[in-house]
Image (cartoon, rainbow, N blue to C red; front, side, top):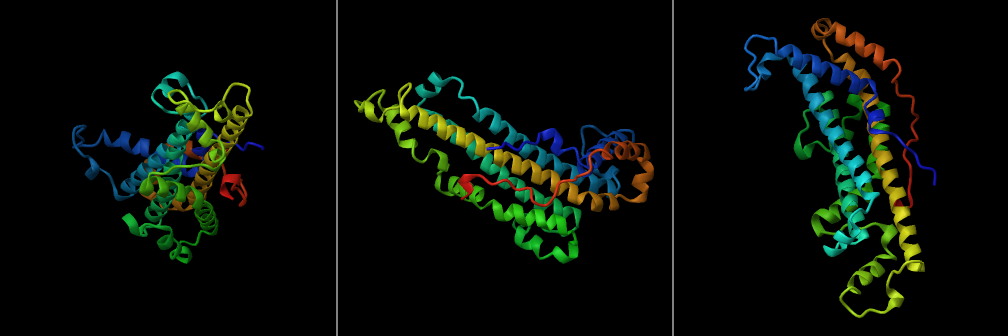
Length: 291
């Protein structure tokens, strides 16, 4: 299986993120020089409406990046089953360990989708909050928003996330987390754990060099490949969705803000020249657990 890859750093190298981060930094830095600024108090009243708009987008963007970081961390942790003897002493086997991190992955990928809707709602002033800020509500605003590529991305992402959403819902409401890669080998892993304290036949225990050991390694390899694809999809969709919002965001920066932070905007212009999104529409990567 070819392994698609995009780093967390590459996700944020787009015009929307660069502009939002640089401007937010300049706005906060400038506020510290304003009369009435108090480090120990809320200084929101010192910002203009346009500055507040930019900062709110920055906070949502920060939440998105925190989700991406958690996805990255889950994929890093799940690759190494360090402290095997300690985990086994605590009755945690390699599948338990793997699915624990997969649970985090599912939650954060599903949360990302909600944050996309929150970002779109705020940027386009849709005034959708809480449960009303959903795909169903956003989709009704498609003509008003008039951003075909954005809606292509949101729709494709929403339609392809059914497996992840189902995993998350089962975990949240039924306490179950599972992955197809471990379906056949999971009973043998459990029996191997029980064999430490119970007289269980060697035929159903995973031993070094056995076919069952090969089956476990093969299952875990498949699982790790598919978690990497899940991460890739989350990362590439985030980058492309942010790219699709760049033009609207730039248009909503008012002249007063542009004049006040002209030096920052010039720096942004230079950096974004080499970070234009050139990715086509067909970006979703499939894996067998999605069948």
